[in-house]
Length: 485
Ligand SMILES: *[C@@H]1O[C@H](CO)[C@@H](O)[C@H](O)[C@H]1NC(C)=O
Ligand SMILES: *[C@@H]1O[C@H](CO)[C@@H](O)[C@H](O)[C@H]1NC(C)=O
Ligand SMILES: *[C@@H]1O[C@H](CO)[C@@H](O)[C@H](O)[C@H]1NC(C)=O
Image (cartoon, rainbow, N blue to C red):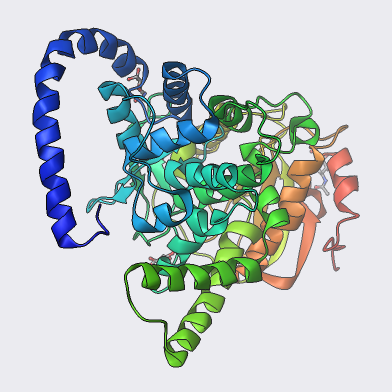
């Protein structure tokens, strides 16, 4: 609608209004019935949790049994109003076909999927997933639909990430931020933690998932796959005791690993340029001039470095507000960056690796309570903590001086693995998360010098930490350094 010329717009509007009038008559009759049914939806589907959204998708599927997933996606897109000229260019018009959706269900889907950032920095159109990350639904579902509609997945990158990148990279800030939910069991409100860009972390997460799942869904097999099943397998996988080492490849916790394997920065940059040109064409504007194009190419290449650093080089870090941190007591001391050392710890207590967002968060809160209350420190001592759920948890973070390695807190970050590693090791996945990703994220972000030295806590303090097994392991890591005496 939005993209047609004014005359048709007005005619369309009149048509809509008269349709609406006609419909309201018959709707009133069925209202009582709807209200009864609605009770079921509204109670079950009040929250902005992915589990609730998947339940809504199931209801859409049940209303039209036997429908292809592509048809289900189209109905979701219609309910959400995701039907502008850019989307239609790749996916066709959503305003046709399929049975009328229940108004209560349709309303829930519209609210859950419609993306916007309000003036008070609330982000809508996003849901909390079980793994503690937040995902915009639009780019996720557009990516899957793109793949289902054409074998070559035309528009897959543009619909998920490239178009939004083409807009966001021209403005400052370019990317992010992440945010915080009001409640983790029944999330409703997601508030961004910094000045919003045109491409928030939740949109990036949704876009990455859209690309990853879009690649997975095979257009040629066309087996009767259910969208709700696909989303459940991807977002609700429960890890066994081996953590991610024994987990399937296509789960949301591996979002960045999968994306990194599928997409390179130059490929994405090319798609960003194509999106910019397509948007002009759809608006009836002429092609970009040489100079303008050069400027955009430069901005995109620069912006891709930032994107690559934030979302492909860095591991997913669960911010303090997401694990329920108490505030820092008093005033933190800023570190002066870059630092030269990375100190490895184990928590010892808790002694068991945590495998879920809930458990890792509870462990973080328990450690913070112990450090603040029993030890009388200002905050949890560690800079970062590695869970076995695929995520790093923010302790004091990149900027605040920690209390992890007595006498060395100003010169290094302290990173601890949740668990007791005297005689066993953390999962390979969580070790790689620290050794490869967190470390290169720190170097790439100018927080750690490139030739930093990695040491075990015991090398500089009289302690058995990080446990014999883990200590022996890290002696083989690339940046491991003996103590200079
Ligand atoms: C979250 O919401 C649920 C359901 O409304 C409520 O029972 C619970 O107390 C809330 N939790 C917090 C921490 O506010
Ligand atoms: C510490 O850093 C923050 C930004 O990270 C800044 O706002 C604050 O002013 C700094 N404090 C001091 C004492 O330098
Ligand atoms: C290290 O600590 C142990 C007990 O925790 C103690 O017996 C030992 O004397 C300490 N060594 C030094 C050099 O302080």
